[in-house]
Image 1 (cartoon, rainbow, N blue to C red):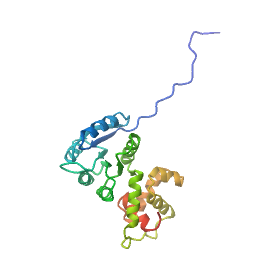
Image 2: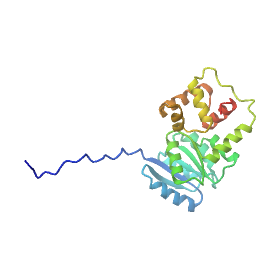
Image 3: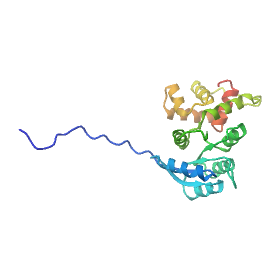
Image 4: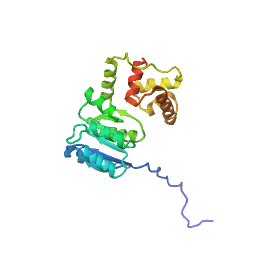
Length: 232
C-alpha cells in the first residue's frame, strides 16, 4: 500500500553547541591598527569585542565597567603603556587575561610584559588565526608565545646566571618533571597533553601541583626553572 507521506531521510545534522562568547578589549594607540583589528575579531563567532582602547587608562575603564575575559594589548601607548596596564590588571582584575600584540620582540619588552602578568605574547606579524588562538588559550588559562618570542625568551634564560636558581624539590613525580620539561620547551597545554597521551585537564592538574611544590609563579618562571634544572 502506498501513501502520499514524504519519505523519512536521515535526521538533519545538529549544529555543534555554541562556545562561550569571550569578551575582548583591543588596545592600540594607532586607530589604523585598532579599529580594523577590532572589526575583524568581532566577526569571530565566539569573540565579542566590547571596547577598543587607545591607552591603558581606557583599558582599565573598560574592564572596570563590565567583566572582560581578554585584553589584546599593545605595549607602546601614551598616558599608560601596556606593561604598566598589564601589571594593574593583574593586581586589580586577575580574572582578565592579557595577550600582548606588539611590534617589539626585544628581551626587555618580553620579560617585562611576562613578569607583569601577560599570558601571551605575539608580534604583529601574527595572522588572524594565531591571534584568535592566543585569545582562546589565554581565556582558558594557557599561555601562547609566538616562535620568535619563545626563541628569544629561551635564549635569554640560557645566557643568564643560574647560580641563584632554586633546586627542584625531591618529591616531584616523574610526570610532573615531564610536564615541566615540555613547558620549558615552550609547548602549550594541548601539545603537552598530546605528547604525554593524557587529557588537558590532567595536564592542568599536574601544573597546579608542580607550581605548588616548587613555588613557580607563572609560565615564564617555569621555563626559567626548567632550563636551570637542565630539563629543557
